[in-house]
Amino acid sequence: MFGRRSDGKLVHGLDGITRLMPLFVRTRSGASNLYMFDIEASYFDDFIEKKKLEGFNYCYMDIVIASLVRAFKVRPKLNQFIINNRIYQRNDIDCTMMVKKNLREESEETGISPRFTGYETIDEVKVIIDEEIKKALKQTNGTDNERDFLAKMPMFILKIVVFFIKFFDNHGLLSKNFLRYSPFHASFWVTNLKSIGLDAIFHHLFDFGNCGFFLALGKEKVKPHLNSETNQIEKTKMIEMGITMDERFVDGLYYSRTLRLIKNYFKNLHLLEKPLEEDEIIKLKSNKTKDK
Image (cartoon, rainbow, N blue to C red; front, side):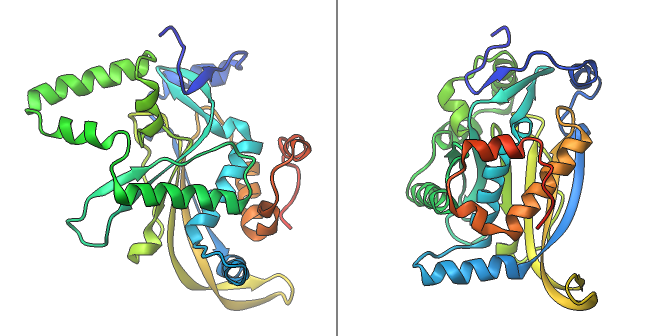
């Protein structure tokens, strides 16, 4: 109430444009920027093979999430959100992804919400993700029961309930437990379209909740690619990703440098094998380093 929330703190001292932007661009879907890019699959494949020799079974999504967790820590504006025309700094780094209990069309789907500090190594991130998936496959999460209960209500009652949920969200009255496990309240949302054989897409942002960053991982493709060492065009296996971003609280320059940082992590995964240090955060907040 009155700007207070359990999942973030109100940001003060904003410049005029940033403070006014949520008033003029009211919806998250209407404020979306789209960015599609490719990464050479060898960066991921070589790392996965290396980890396999160490006894770890990595997948592409583990790498993507670990890279985003690190980027959201060292580029903290990325971890802001807008509710009721106000901009907040999120307290934690929360990820949302949906998990099917098996690949049958009628199979139940549930969301997982792994939480991170941003200081974790990539191995620690993977442990957290695997534990959340394991729990999701065995039982429902903190909001599944409420969701299923709501879905059984008559439509006219359901509309009233949803109205009050949105009202409570706008005024900071939703419970801490609801916000912790709601898939719509997160730092970023990821979806693995590669696992179901689809290309990357630009996934929409949700106007309910406060998640302003969505990454869709698509299946690999063989594409013409310039080899920077030989200066020759070669056929290379590439990983395609589509990102959708709420641009109201982060300007284009900040996003540009952040996306460059994310791609740098993808290309230099050894950087994620050690815990994040405070001096690295200070160095990368301005993110003037170039891709290696």
